[in-house]
Length: 389
Image (tube, rainbow, N blue to C red; front, side, top):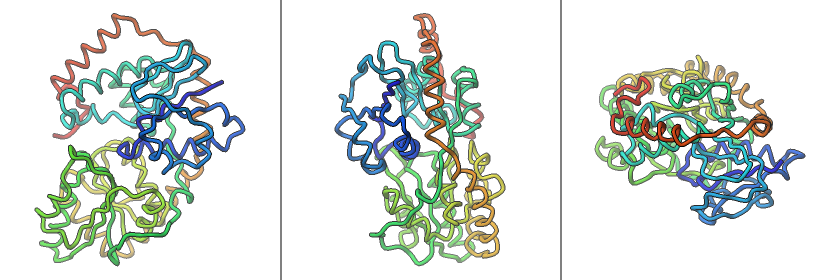
């Protein structure tokens, strides 16, 4: 059986999706069946894949053009690392990755054109797919509800997070002696605004100056972190390091006093388990899959309330006993994720899909999908899955 893996979308800006792919594909490469997988990429993102994959991936690569839709008919399964099944091959079944349904929860975070594209393309890919891979039970239920597909064809494959992913490396940036850490791209739902406002509240109301290190890629269309740091007069407390390759990030993480994670939406939230595994206490919200992920091993706050975030920062910064309890509970929580065999789980999805018939999406069904997508794009409040404004 030959598997074509669409890695074209996996640039640095892909965030946790690229890390997720790197983890399970690294395990696949160690399998006796590893010669069955071909990574399809384009020249622009080859170096991005080199950053996160072991060198052996180059023995499994095949370059394609960025806009290509059809690939060789020799493939039995085409696996998309994103929610959009871009590629087609005669006789090949489809498996797609849907980490979450952010567009359903925060539709107004996306311009109209992108909103329409997401609703339409994701819905049709979900309909065509023989199997859908997601990362949490929360995401499985949300995908089934929003895109109207049976839960039986959605497999939950959480990422394996263990010691190899948090190994420190050299060449660290200049860091404060003690700091809280938040890692996230500057997308609106990552909630940097309330975190920075909370840090200012801690300074002004509690007379405590908490140093904070931010990491993650930034885009010009995202939240302007630099401007907010200036607006809240936090330039002497907050450092934004941008994207860090995994080894350097792990070293920054291990030196943090705490991970403060105010994201309002996660399909999983890998930094939370990475922090717990590294012995770093976590303070976070409870939205989407976050509560499912951390259980009672984190200090919870209301991610919509900057004052509540500020109180949590003060507690986790000043209470050594609390941090010790969170570290102990977090390590127990993280141990379960270190034992996950992602490679085997992904391969089972491929094997199961290969035994199915290829779903047919007729003209009438495609028209219905596009009509619903247009309606949701034009009336985004209809699309929301219980999101707060």
